[in-house]
Image (cartoon, rainbow, N blue to C red; front, side, top):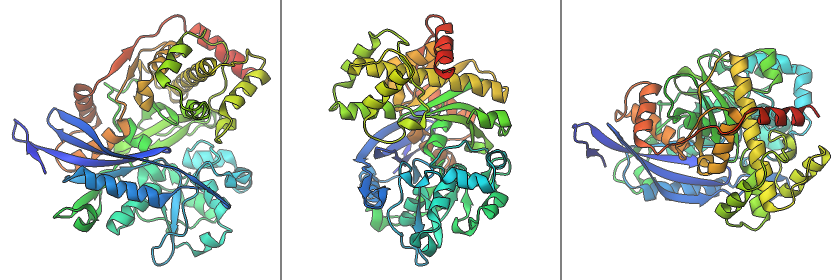
Length: 486
């Protein structure tokens, strides 16, 4: 199960279950002194399903994929689970799941925020929880659901990674980094915001006890994995962004990060939340991270925009599409990549061209032109988030780290460097899985030290690419002013 390194310290193996909005995978990481490698052993689709009552996650298919992946992983020293945030499953008094979890892109929360703010004004809600407004926050989902028959039967609420952990071990818990995305946690105390919950009639007893990254989360039986002995499940930063930020290979504290994939999460790692009215107005969020940190960031629509276009175009060759996009003039047309108008699936190319037409910009027509519009818009949104985060948190940075799937998009990385006027260090691509593995490794003794030590191991062992800014960032400032002054 474990191999000895040349220093005599054990190299151990860890399975990272990493679930994204479009696919899940199980990765196996080997960790020891100067050893950190990662292998994908199983990947499976995550296909949401539209049923008469709305858009739902196929949680049983996901669980089957997790089990297949863990069996394919072979003997490991521990397992950890991370996924997207905010969504949950409801259990009855017997611990049985009450229906498939609702997808965050489902329309049930339309108009709910205004009802919440009538009881807890938006400014008070932000001051208490530090969470940016997003229509799919768990808080709004709960208010939308509480009049349903299903909710009336619920005795327990488990966020997606905690639900899978329960099925694997029989033990229930609520991991804190993911809990912080519910808009029911106080980022100063790192505990529930009981005042907010009470005012909105939300019973906190629905939630299982809080867990921290590194805490034990139960044992997975040998019959599930085909092993001879039980395998410990270890709590990690179960919000995939928390795991990804833990795997930012930064030196020191003067850095910004952008976790790229379906979403772009752009911001700073801080030691305390920023709860000012200016921060709320700028729609920055304060989510909890590893070792008492705060992930101060803004949600940006991310490569979802391009993914949806590519799907509608019939999945053309992405490398060719990006080469053609690179030849399109820069900043010809841009859209607000944070606009909720792009949240729902379907008709993405048409919606992008309509947004350009409505703002009196040249209308992109070809796939290459639309792709360039998307990437310029994402780079502009990255710039805006990085600049404003520094101002609001009084936390200057010297470099931007891009981690996640977007690191494979060299054009996006270069445009982000150009837009920010700062060097960009891209990598690792598998940041969420690596952060997951590193937290397990520290809990089980094959890695040691604080976040700096873990990041040094990442920097020594992972492939990183550096992009220097080109041209004059004033062009991006002008584009930003044109877009947001309309």
